[in-house]
Image (cartoon, rainbow, N blue to C red; front, top):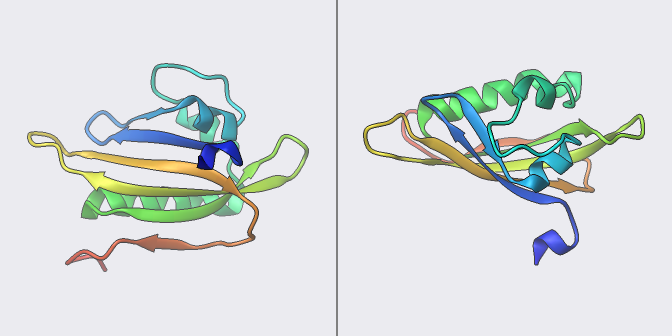
Length: 125
């Protein structure tokens, strides 16, 4: 139902391999050609606003390190010389015998917010 009125996609980050797999809609949000293999993160990050890249990378790093979820709003090139707002929401998924995965959703939205949040876990600074 949500995907009927906005671009809305699903993804998974394999923490052991460092591979980021995403649905076709996530590729569409970043204006990239779809691939069934891992996303090219260099191309993906090339579409994120320069001021948002550092926060974005730190968010994934902290979530991986502390095995927690997060939400993050940031700007992505819109193909018309400007930017659109995108939000990613993720959760850590424990997989025995591995470092686990981060799984989540990414979608476009209209509000101008620049927020980052983590789920509450012991030991998170």
